[in-house]
Length: 270
Length: 66
Image 1 (cartoon, rainbow over the protein chains, first blue to last red):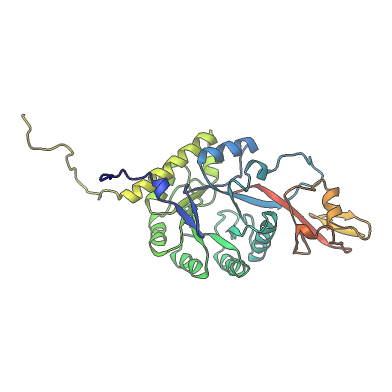
Image 2 (cartoon, each protein chain N blue to C red):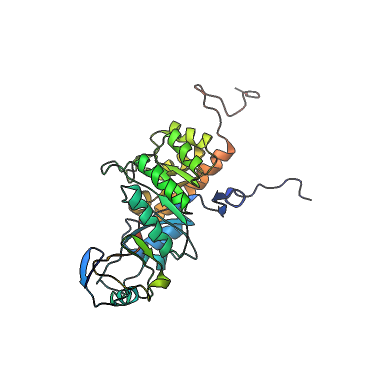
């Protein structure tokens, strides 16, 4: 009998559960802004992500029909594809996009809802977001929703039946990091569904901070794709999310204003 | 008659189907989705779906995004 069990690594024992499905990785990544599909594939591989976002756009008509398809390098049988509604400014456009995505992905109903309200900040339009979420949920979609770091809105989205709530940490693509950790923390404490920081992470320490706040995961795109070496940054993000999660579970020491010696004061010979 | 495909006008013969359009666009067998006048057309309906004059067709696929 093993009386002194070694704890399992966090990843193995501590899955992220979204809509009843268990994931090992708490890092979700986007597929935008990469140099080419080879770089996309390599970065996503290095990130260890299992949930990968894609956008839905018009097919290029009359262009090279042999051009490789994103879903050839990110195959839906290996990754959970999370179609987004990026670029939508109305609930109606977001719902249309999700319905097209569901058809495209053979009935797959997990979506990332984002309805934007402003071109400069890309802040979410929460009124349209709530409207779209209601329609989508009625229509059988499983909605992971991008929103502001407003606790009241987050609560409402959870009450409506969203399967994950994803507040921004800073504007999309800004890389400014976790601008209001207290607001993120309120949401983490109050909600039962997974809370993921979506947008704003710039580097590995930002991802670790998000996880140390108790977030269930982090979704990012630009922080990896716009790094000088995206594949290396993807690997850094993987470690940061794991480290942040373990630190959160471990429970940090209390902060104190003055020093506390690490070496015993007894037994000194000087 | 004329239909509008992804924002561009396209002259097509009467009786033209969604299946013919997909083939003419070189998209047969590709992972796409289609809506006509804002209604989804399931892939299995392409052969039977006949366009009407003025139909607005959108053909979409997945691309990189965050």
